[in-house]
Length: 457
Image 1 (tube, rainbow, N blue to C red):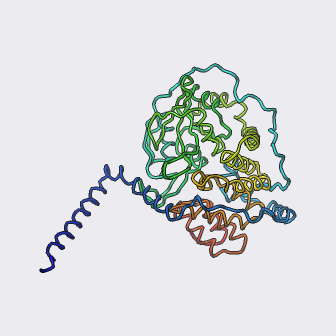
Image 2: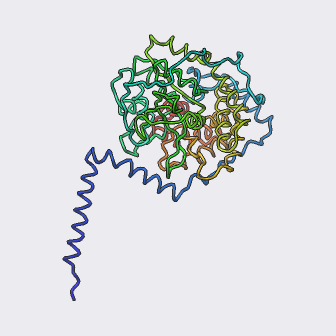
Image 3: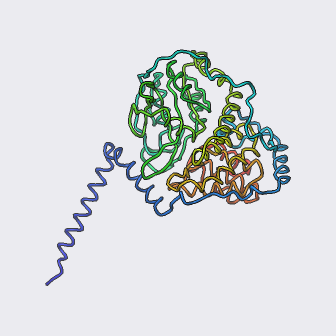
């Protein structure tokens, strides 16, 4: 019997034709927009299957260093001439890594930081309706990893701004393409969203931490939707960060109404779940408003309108929760405490808080471990770098970069480079800085560090 060559050829040609048709259909925008994120998600899950990031545990190496050496290193950094650029507010902790602190504190902080003024109720007790839903937000489903730009666009739409997630992403995630893993910057920081509003719109914005259910309800009742950054559990993916626009509440059901770019418009979240998931991001919230209504926003914020008060208040809140909570919730509270102490430029105290968080981390069940947390919050880099713990900066950045299926983590590359420079490894530092610029073209801290080295981007 002769081998059926012709049949085999027909089959191969058929397979090629089917694949070609499939690729052709996949490239059509309506089909591509619905399927591409599933392809990207599948690639991510395959990566995690063979490289389970939840099993990797960061162990600080320098936490037991001689205290005198830490003080000397911090003192030398404090004596370094200040750069011409200056940091303000929360941006000093997250926005521009190239900005040096005004000075590094070396004393051990009190277990519970004391606010600069006597604690008061966040707001003047004002009667508000039991149910409010703010209409007029144009909902969008997010592109791959694009929840920050999408939620910012949705919040802006309430105020009549014309644009969408492509408009905001062009500023927040330069080089990003819808549903693509190319130039896949993993996270948009709150300060970047603030920058967009201030530079690209006629609206104003305020960012604060330490929010609560009471604050959210009063802002919404006053007519202001709120962007919150919070933790999010995705089946098969585990814990990750997520933005949502909160535009309503219903006391009779005990739920907030949110515009969720990942799930659906008008998604209900219980008050308890909101606070629990919000904790992972220090209860961060952003409020966009027309400039002529600033007095209204500040009146609702009450004492929290004062940034210095807000920073001390949030530190106190985190310190209190550290004493009250256990397990993963306590890990988040310790992380929050560290982040707040970084904002207050108490780097030694912050390093201690992060050390305690990482000591607790292995006790969290693997499937619940928030291994992505340094994708979104870079406070440990500040704390360890400004206390001279360069090995910890390098190790933590390396582990963070390795946890991602595609390493679009420009902040981690910059911080690893800075620690490498401090230890004399300029060759690897230059490579890391250029890699940071690949994932986030124009990222100013990377450009600044290359300029300091006399290297062209």
